[in-house]
Image (cartoon, chains in turn orange, cyan):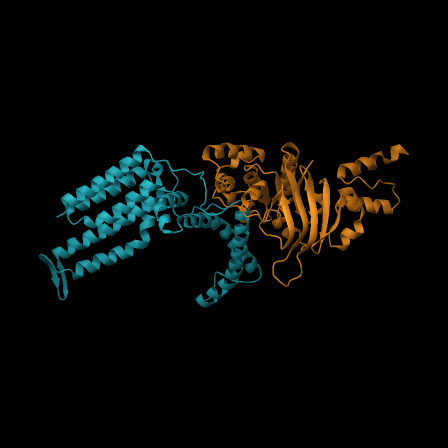
Length: 279
Length: 264
């Protein structure tokens, strides 16, 4: 498993003389993994995301995607084709007048021949289960559906990485679930590397690895089970713990003997109902 | 939720609907020019027949065409009256004090109003039978040669299509802001004109701020998706020039020739 993203001592700020928004961050992303980057508002996580496909360029340090440097002007379009990005607001990234046009937008930009485009378009819409809506206009779609169209637009370019930049934060619980499920499928079946940037820890539970950011720096890096053990640290930087983690803590406090590794709701339930039978 | 038809496009499957937007644009453009060639009964009759044929073939209900005409009707009536009163040619028909109507004036008035009417009906027919996005596509291709003299034709077309796409979104937002302001006691529907205009300001400010924020985010998203202007771009939407489009062009050219020959 190679490193698909390598960030070395990245520093970035929006204006000169400002303090660093990203302060010498180093990290890597393995091919095929699901990495969550969590942090409170203003922790620099969204800025970091924009550095990863060359929307913002590092002032110091370097960002390499599959070996290509984002500061290389000739490579930038290849990088953007490799790294798809889903943004927060479903409406403000919908460019086309219909679903079909929007999915095609990225392909048109990259000069994919029309015949090829039609095939990829159908495949991409099927993958996100939006094929019935191909001719629909954006204002008739729900937020979750619009985000799925955004994902289809990215998939059509067969990228190796998809960055979700708070992509679920404006959705209702159902829409959120749809997006997570779609992404998990793509992660497993199409081996697409997923980088999820979020302040919602419920979402981060599913990831293979987590990075916690605070004030432009990487605070912690590790497996979700490790990170969630440090409940106090997470609360201190203003993050809300997932329900299961809180529940587990409360039960532990009351003296219920629970392991600390299981994070998912099913795991907790499993543990609770077998608790008595073991004794 | 929303059921907005942008522009005045009436969806349909008629011959006119299915024509290539380029053909329709060219035909209407040419027609609006050649109508000025008409100067006698025969030539006007030809132009009117051509227009009515279009209306008939489009199967668009007449009330839609009337709706397109409504704002112009006053102007047509006004030009009619002016022409009747101030053209002093031919036989004197009515004379009453300072009020004179000449035969030439009457004919002139009929011709000029016919000309206006026909132009409006033809252009209305274009927008009624062609979706705004098709018109945009057609214009982009027709104006394509102007790219050579550095006119931003592609950018203009993209701007149009994004504007069209965001109309419903902005309407939705307007409604939301209006409800929010009403909930805080703002009154948009009653009071003096001055107070109503004043009530609109707190509606416009958040809308503008929102629109700018949207624009910025959209630009970012477009860049992330590899948009770099017109360079090496392919297109999903395709316009197909068929036999009926060639036929329309031929008919229009034939009409042009006929008007040249038959004009007095």
